[in-house]
Amino acid sequence: MSKNTAKLANPNLETMSSDFLYHLDINVANTKDTSDIEHRFGDVRVICTGGTALRMRVLALYMRKVLGIADTSDPVDLCERGHRYAMFKVGPVLCVSHGVGSSTFSVVLHELLKLVKYARCQDPVFLRIGTCGGIGVPPGTVVVTKDAFNGLLRNEHEIAILGQRVVRPAQFPEDVIKNILAYGADPNDGFQTISANTMGTDCFYEGQGRTDGAICEYTDEDKMAFLQKCHDLGIRNIEMEASMFASVTQKVGVKAGDVCVTLVNRLAGDQVTITMDQKHDFEQRPFLVVGRYIKKLLQQ
Image (cartoon, rainbow, N blue to C red; front, side):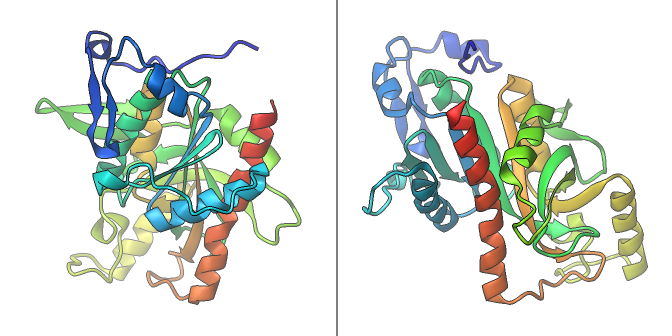
């Protein structure tokens, strides 16, 4: 099977003599000779992303067990000097924090995409692992995103570029979804792993129809009607990154998947009522699913 490196969608990269991935604190001093970058990152096959540095550190430790890497040292944050994102390398897997929301995620996503290009990584797969609110599914359900909807309930991502409104489609590859479900889910897990649509909003409170924020100019009935409309569109979870993540990776032709666990059923209320122990247990569930998928992927 032939393998491919990321091509990206920016011809300017081919004419740049150097490229400083500022937020990752990685300097590509010579884009015509990237042997140093290839030596450091060329073996990377999977890039896992998630909100916090702590969660990505825990994932890195977990991936050591999954991949059978005998290393008891403390994971090294390769981006520590940048003071913005955290990156841990576990064999062919990178675990990188992305902050909260599309704006912070898009910054590191662009730089990670350039990193795998310069490193000539073969067939890289990007995965987002996180938490979310559910719609009509019990807390603890793992949702693998199919189509990503924005806050206007459109299956697209909208961004302002040079003062113009640019809209791009936001779907994740069917084969990635299929394989995550086939290799990652297990009927004996004690929780459900499903494929469904996801809404990615630009706001945690008003943008998600919550009535517990600092501002609320709609009724509870309005909220429930909105959430029911989401449910009717096959949306089973809400977070703040899916539409951007799907659109960017789809635009550059890089495979990606979004795997999140629900902490609340929004049809039953806005507040998270599970205990902290339950929350920690739920947060491990996407690790379990993604870990199995990655192990199988690396065997192919």
